[in-house]
Length: 237
Image (cartoon, rainbow, N blue to C red):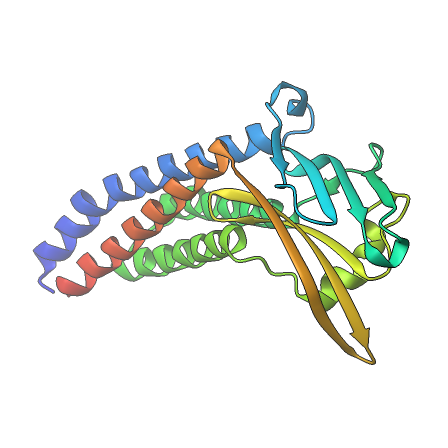
């Protein structure tokens, strides 16, 4: 790369792109903060995820920011003579969605690094290292919000942390996650054989959540800008 090309890239091309990345990350952080702030959570509209009537199970989940504040599951199963049981989430112990908190942490980390390091960039290599870091955090944030991480055994072992009253039967699991632009609620009946777990029935409800929709528009676009900048640098080197 010629010296004048390096000067142009470093002084003219890179700064506005980094400013655009910073603005996008700030927008994303604002959306997260508005959604997950406990002080403001009462101002947010809750989203209701209601299951279709299926034999043996109905349920309603209310998502409020980064937590489920209400959940009701009604079960009617042959083993209990079709007698219906109702299980409600305790209002004192909301069901936190770690995916959303993890995604928020990654976006905030990216913003913090960008705000700190962009003031001290001296070479194109500094820019490359910074943008690669940003891309890594954004990839992780996107993964947090689109790929549920909890496996069946993890859901089973975390069951005691989800405070339903009365407790769900031993062979019934409830889980909730972010899956793209919607939030999902899942209920499974399982059979445990030694160390193996087999899902016998799986029921799922979901609802489009507008603020998740906003975040999942911003994060991929910001990641694409990082990749385009890296590509621009590589093409002119």
